[in-house]
Amino acid sequence: MNGIVSIPWVAWAVLFPLASAILSFLLGQKRVLWAGIPGVFGTFLSVLLLSSQVWQQGPQRYAIGGWRAPLGIEWHVDGLSIVMLLMTAVSGLFISIYAVGYYSRQSRGHKHSNNLFWPLWLFLWAALNGLFLSADLFNLYVTLELAGIAAVALVTLTGGQVALSAGLRYLLAALLGAMSYLMGVALLYASFGVLDIRMLSALAAPGPAVFISATLMTLGLLIKTALFPLHFWLPPAHANAPAPVSAMLSGLVVKGSFYLMMRLWVEVFPSSLWPIGGQFLGVLAGAAILWGSIMALRQGSLKMTIAYSTVAQIGYLFLFFPLASPRLFIAEGEVSGPGLYAFWGCVYQALSHALAKAAMFMAAGNIMRVLGHDCIGRMDGVNQRLPLTLFAFGLSGVSLMGLPPSGGFVAKWLLLKAALEKEHWGLVLIIVAGGLLASAYVFKVLKHALAQSSQNDLLERVPPTMDIPTLILATLSLLLGFTARPLLSLLTRGSIF
Image: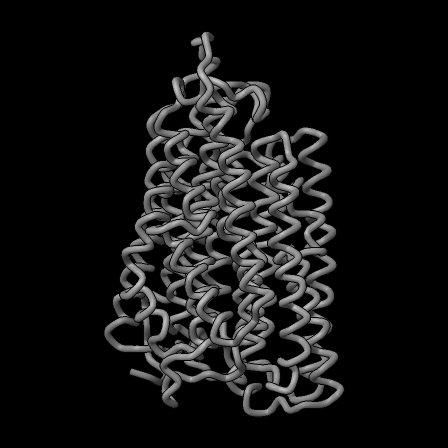
């Protein structure tokens, strides 16, 4: 069912976390969970109901206040946006449960601000949901910036000099990316007088203004997504943030700017930009996979290893651009081919990475709580003290390596299939090499963690609310390999591809 209709659950997907963020801030530390936990489950439920609605009725548009574009603001829901909303809802639910245990008592050596975490996290969640629903370039900018501001504040929650320095670097990168993106939006508006994506897709034609806008907006989004070599802010920010913050940053926040970039390149920018631009982004993607993996292998800190792994895994997302062809529409009969495989592979990579990487950072938080450090060389005995946590880390590693039957395997297989059909042999080698390098740094951690230790003293015990959500997310990243058919079917319901 297409057209302008009233979709209550669309509004609740944003209003639940936003209202809960405000209430949790007003209630203060002693009652912060009274608003936070209901907001988490309310948001999760609203996204599930919205997903069911899209599954049954197809893509829909919701005019806020009844005013249609270009005068009013519209939200758009299709297969791609609903899959991203589901990714955020599932990851966000278990990250929130983990955070309850993480902030139940102060971690050794740090004074975490429980009363600030929940309003910032829920505000970030509301901004991400708004991003996945927005249908015009300016509101996409607003939601992207709101998410960025909340993410920067979350990075600095520990209050130490290292965390503040990492947060400041993140803030400067976010502002630089925002200015670049906004200049591109302003140029498009000056040229065509509209910002609605659907309207721009019919108006934008090859020319200097469109080319400059595309360059500025792409540059800004590349900075925010931290694609190599613009990743300078990501490792310190992700590695020095509290564990639940690292999980949401790596699993969710970087996916928002990638989602927006994919929308723009397919729906707004003309196809004449793809041949050169797509190949250039492919070179950066290949370099990100190799460089990020090698740097992850060289790290001595567990959280820094996982952070550089994120740099590498982001590279797989951008393989979409050299492997896909512009404007592939399912409605026009494009039901196979390398472009569709690349689309499926990159989105499935985003899903599997969100679950696996969130679980990895949560596992690192558990290990740091028990050992008091995250030095890989001194992790012997972790298997004796945290068997569930180490098992979860291993399951997440299976997905990052791309081994069956994980979601990472499905994603990388689809990308390999697209590269083989396009005879892009360089990318085939990079995808295979990336999997081998991922296995190297995952097994490096497991080798030390599985070593026996005579010391059985625990600095702190990990509550079940930290252990169990970590294992569930890691298991879900593995089970994604068995749910590919329904998820890919949902992904192509009214999708732009």
